[in-house]
Length: 174
Image 1: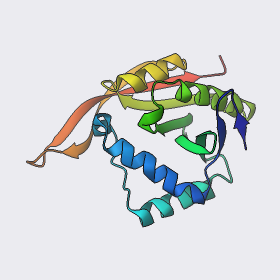
Image 2: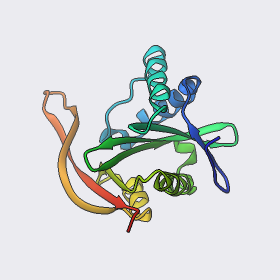
Image 3: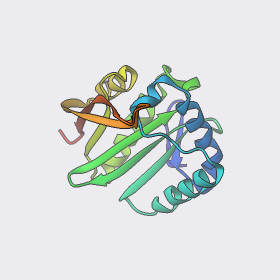
């Protein structure tokens, strides 16, 4: 165990977590909001390989991957990847656990923990139309500093399907 909140346990992802992460991705891929993110490959071998890489990366601080657990169930995860000026975060929670404050609770604890490591600047990107994600980021203290045109999918004619992505920044040192 790495961190414990009132309701959650937050720990580093390990290779054996692949089935739980796959369930989260299958759930995510079926959601309407998935159009605003890169598609998640849910082939068993691909997921197993990717999660093993995540687990191996957890030995340092360049890339950190955390499982967010309610009891023994992984309900989501958060990833922190070093960039030029801070860390870019990404997260995904199973829809059965949306709207219950778990994402805010876990990320508040993670930011407190990372501050003890001297990590204080974070960036995140999400679609402006992804209201739940935008609301989460704002509730955590992130500020929208810009937007960009983003595309992860093509239409039937091969044209990019473009949406407006928000660029958010949080500095916990201020």
